[in-house]
Length: 450
Image 1 (cartoon, rainbow, N blue to C red):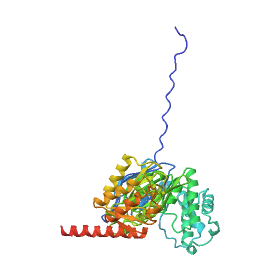
Image 2: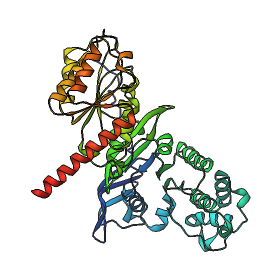
Image 3: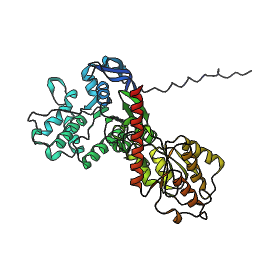
Image 4: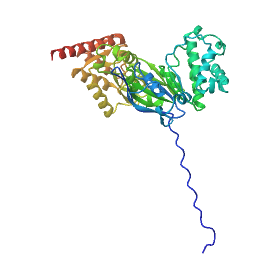
């Protein structure tokens, strides 16, 4: 029998301490003058986050930021700061926790730049309003961060709009709060100062600050923000990383604008390529266009159609074609196939399904061989089924027919059957726009008759 000391039970390891979110909104709603500005918004901003808020004008970006800052009382829901309701914190405590750069601010007093920046230290002042011991250094750092040391002794009333904006940002940086909320801080700034501001915010975030910034420049947000939230009509449309959110489909839905999305340094880069739906060609949304192309032959007309508000599908293209790349970047439906191989029955069926749904089929001036003659046959069936078919005829089919003349025969059969010849992209686009307009007018007349 053992005569040693009784076995000791090791004390359990303490559970890791959970850090509450820096800010949290739950069911946040704002209604003013019977207009809903925010509608049941839920948003969590973790400590140390760098969050960009994007959205069209009037989507609720400024309203959300003001609620997070405690500057606007919501009609419903609640904002929490560090795990406690914002209403449970007194105003001085909030001012020491949250620094805010508003979208608009009037600086009409003849204070010097240094004096205005020093106002950011007000929440830290001791009794009798004395400057705190670290105040002077904080002001100097803020002036240096925004490169406005040379303006320190000038009255703010003598500054340009961009200079005033930098002073306002410096004032908030001098406040030295763990949370920074900035509403369109890049307004009125030229490009080098926009970059300067975003780089300063990146550094502060790396040092542990939580940064929430409203910006209009999608690419600037994508370059610097770790996470994005997209607002639309007062609701959160999407929330996540720039790579996950900034897709042609999401941006078309939120901003009503067609874009291409490329990668630059691992981050998405967005280029608008079409007008708003409200400014699209008449009837564009109601006309389904399918483009039969390959070898890059359809890129020009594809881009023209997208600019005018159409959302064409296309096929059958090689995954290495520029047609395929363009369609992918625009978020369009595309049927693809391996290069240098005959089209499989499955691919042909998938293509035929898209063609059967189209009101208008366009044949780009691609090169034809044995592998893609089925494209012309599919177009023939579409024509027989009542779809409008437009054939781009230049360069001449004889120069593109590598199938022993069979492509030329099939194209001529299309033209003889009523397909519309178009010598160039402009002519084809004009024909498509005319077709869209006629269909829209016919629909309007039919509705009026009902």
